[in-house]
Length: 491
Image: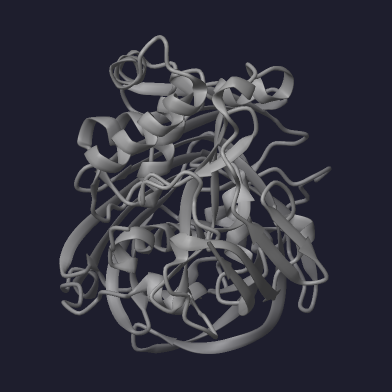
C-alpha cells in the first residue's frame, strides 16, 4: 500500500471543521429560531456605519485578519460586509484563503439575503440565499455551476455571525440561555445551538480596559465565547482548537501574519492508538472500544460495522460475485442523484465516467475502474476548499475530501449508487480523520480512492455517512474521542 504523510490526507479535513467553527462568528451560518417574536430591548443596537478590524489567532499566533463593515440602512435594516484573509502553512506549503461575505438584515437583525464566497489557490465556492415566504432559497456550488435548494423555515432566520448581537438585542439576561438553530450554506445543514449570558467582565481591548457583556455558544458540544461592548459590538472571541479573535486598530490589522502560523490540525485532532497495527490492509476484523461519542447521532452500527455497549467491531466485506448483482431499486436509487458538491449529472463528469468504463462492464468492474482511475489521476496534495467534484476533475488535485466527492460523482454517473463516509482511519500509530466512499454493487461495499482499496481496510471507522449536514456532527466529538484496540484478526 502506498504511504502518504497523514497531514496530507487528513489535515485539510480537520482544517475545514475549524473553518466551520470560525463560521459561527463569520456569518457563514443562518438560524431559524422557532416561534420567535421580536420585542425591541432597551439595548437595541444603534451603531453608525463603521469599519472594524479583528485579528485571528491560533494559540496567540496571528493566522488571519477580518475587515468588517456594519452599515445602518435607511429602510431600518442593516448591511454587513466581511473580508477574511487567512494564511495556512501546510507541510511547508503556504496557502492563502480568502472569504467574502455580504448580508442584508431586517430591522430585528433577521436575515433578508446573503452571499458567501470562498477562494483558495485552486478552488472556489459560492453560496447565496434569499428569504422568501416560508423558505430560504439557496444557490450553491462553483460560480459556473450552481445548484438550487429550497429549505423550509418556520420563521425568518438570523445570521449566526450576528448571533451574539442578536442575544444582546433580545436582552438576554445574566445566567439565562436561548436556543437558536443555525444553517450552514456549505453543507445545507441545520443544527441547534444554545446561547448563554454569563457574568459581565472587564477586559483589555486596544490598550483600554472595557466593561463587557459575555455570551457563550454551545455549538455541537464545543464552547465559543464573545465579549460585547455596552453598545453591542463584538470585541473579542475565543473558541475551538485555540482559536481566538480580537478587535484591533487598522494599523495593527495590517501587520504581517506570523511566519510560523502553521498548525498541524491533523495531529492536533488525531487519536493515539494503544497498539501498533502492522499491515492494516491485511486485517479482516478489528474490535475497538470507543469512549466520548454517542451512538444516537452517529452511523456506528450497520453494514460492516457492529456497535454494542461501547465496542465497535469492523469486519472486512467480501465483494459479491458479479452474477449476483441486481440493479439498484427503491431508496437506493436516491444515491444516483446529483447534488451541490457531487455533480454527477454534469456533462464533464458524465464524459469522464464514459471514458473510464465500458458499456459491457458489470457494476463491480465499474466500481473498481472508477476507484483506480481517481487513485491514479488525482494528485494527493492538501487543498483548502469546500470540495466539489467538478473542480476536482478540472484541477486533478486534492486530499481525501476531493477524492471522495469525485469518486461519488463518477460512480453515480456510471450508474453505481454511491455515498461518502467520514470517520477515522489508522496510520503510523494514530487514528486520523478521513473521508472515503461506499458504493452499491449488489450490497454496499466500502471503497477508498486515496489508497485504491475495495473494500477499504477495517481501520476505517465510520462515524457519519453523507455529504452535507451529517459531517457537522463530527465537530462535537473532535478532541473528545478515546480509542482502545481490543483485538485484531488477520488473513
